[in-house]
Image (cartoon, one colour):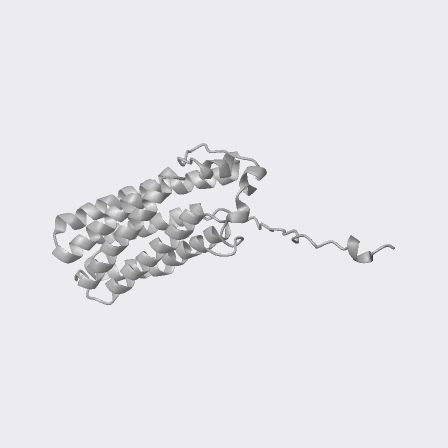
Length: 230
């Protein structure tokens, strides 16, 4: 006698499909906007703009730099680029905090609260920079030097030593040059599908550009947004 229950099988796990939505790289946007921010701050520190007009620099920082850095960070999250996703919003929020506190006090005044904020930001940005060296060395250099600059800014807010402010302003100009190079290199990389200006990619960051689609998808099942927990 045939038993219909003997043919009944326990269903296996349902197949899962992961849909990836291509997005443009936000790294050029983040680097270019960072370069603008560091130049605006240097213009204040090196006295390129009269003291009575420095508030306009911070307004420009809030209107131009902060939104673009935050947008670059959001797009980096969508592109699954963790180092850019963590660093761009952090930099943007640091610009925003600096601008707001500077606007709330008289031009040229120093702030203990801003000193604490900038010294704390320096520590966090330094950690981001050290991690970024594992993938994009140009980004790692930029973040590490940005951390040094935030530390100098914090020391100036504490001590009022003019030489420290000048050193920070000069470092800001150098940072703008690095940001310009990095943004241009990232943009050319996207436009030409090669790296005429190297970004210092290595590890997974290098595979992301030179590898095949299969290389990209090897670990996707274990990435945040796909795995069950962060």
